[in-house]
Length: 248
Image 1: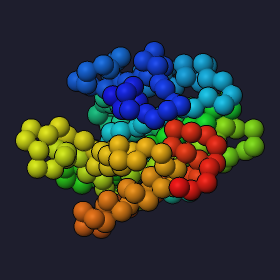
Image 2: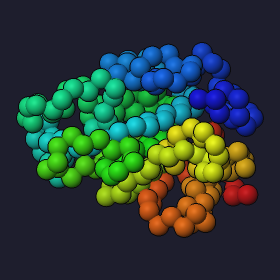
Image 3: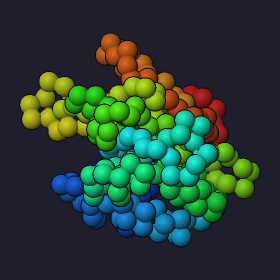
Image 4: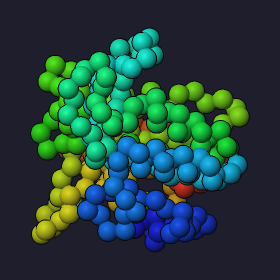
């Protein structure tokens, strides 16, 4: 949030009134990340954007899976879900997790924004399970993973372009920890988010591809063999930009 307001390189500037933060116990948040609030914010964004606008979306939190709500919609029979702050206990398996945000809902929201011709960069900092990770146990009998690639769908010519950054493979976890390491009373960050912003602070004038490579190089330097982030879309455009550019 602070990076978007203060550190994004020229010529991009995010006016405070154009930045919506939904979070719990975070200064500057405009509300809690409830199911209704997330959908309303995405719908409001889709209503406001115009062709050639730039949109940055950052989904950071818990992810899981549940049996698909629309039969035949998923090859594995499972819907990928995000778990807003107001999810309820999963009692009826056939009905799904109450207040979960289903991948189809997110995909529809992204389509609505891109249908207006806006360029979207979306970052998914989530994982499927594990101790000290951002996974939530929905049911012990399910493999808890989030296949975020299902959320972006195809890319018709009429739509705005898309760049998607994923924190981990579908079978991996991604940690949350106090960062920077070794700093007293360091706040907790998602490793993926922290590394992205750290690399941008070092060199903001990079392409999405170069930023992704920098993240992977940092993981390697830290001797991290997992998770393995994924990057796809219009990767040769400048970060926070929309046009392809020569590598620098």
